[in-house]
Image (cartoon, rainbow over all chains, first blue to last red; front, side):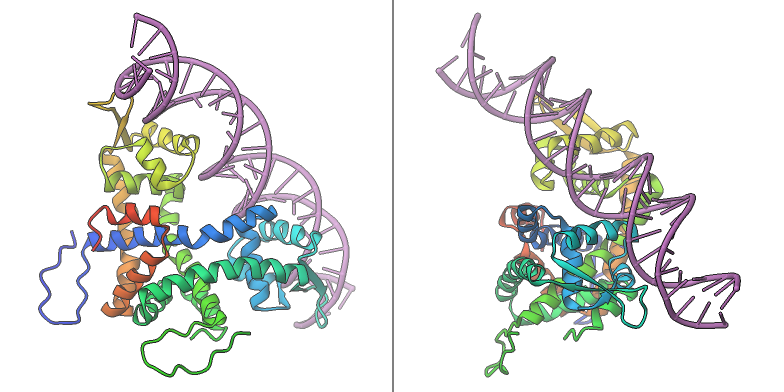
Length: 165
Length: 165
DNA sequence: TTGGAAAGTCAACAAGGCTGACATAAAATC
DNA sequence: GATTTTATGTCAGCCTTGTTGACTTTCCAA
């Protein structure tokens, strides 16, 4: 199945199953590296990846609502609520009743929340920066193109809504 | 914060914090897209990502040992054992006592295991192929370069040990 | 004023991580 | 030959983070 002949022209993509499998494996290993530093820091503070995701997206869009976050994170409100509750209790996140619609809660990072976000994201950015420098500028642009093409259209919208390029 | 001036020369990398954050977010969203199809198929069969990982690496290296798998997957033997046990019970994986060293168990996929592996990986390859075609050949090579640079050195070894390029 | 959306809560459960303790067989070493 | 180390498996229990279902409160809007 799916055995292509040799490429006739130049610039065409001939993707064997083995090449594609290798690409999948690269995603797996790279994602492990990508989350390793954050995981270590989070554990130190008694949190998990779920907390990191919440903190990241609240920092990205201060004042965002719970519903907004649910759409981006793709988990149930019960699951998100458990995480948000601990972050609020611990004083990392502030939840303000919506001004116009008082059912909504607008979420913000506190000083302490900003501090943790910075600790985590700067470690992650350092790893990313090192990888980008090693791979070179052209590679980085290709990296971004492929990742974007790999997203679900819905998530891609959320990705592009905040000045990506 | 961190607004860089315009690059003077060509080919240099100017990585603002915002660009790096965006790269991290792209990884998050792309990984979600990347695992979406496999997750759907696995759920249909009553399995999870952990089963997928085991099946993937047994297919990649037939006859691999439990210890080998532990090193690659980075989980505890108890965790892996739980997964392997169900796969063996369900007849997807076969465990043969080692020929030279009888303490070892050599792991293989059965016909049924191969079938599931193929079902999952072909969905994943289809998604990857589509993304690669959309992004173009140069992008793909950059994508691979960056991912490789992002891996932990230890995992990178495991990645390159199986004819990557 | 009433229906429904948004948000929160409680309870129960499952997958898949983890640690610690222990068992067995086989290999390796002393 | 006795001892130690290695490879694997297993039991018990804990944690995080996902799930569903049921129910309440708030409050906007038709």
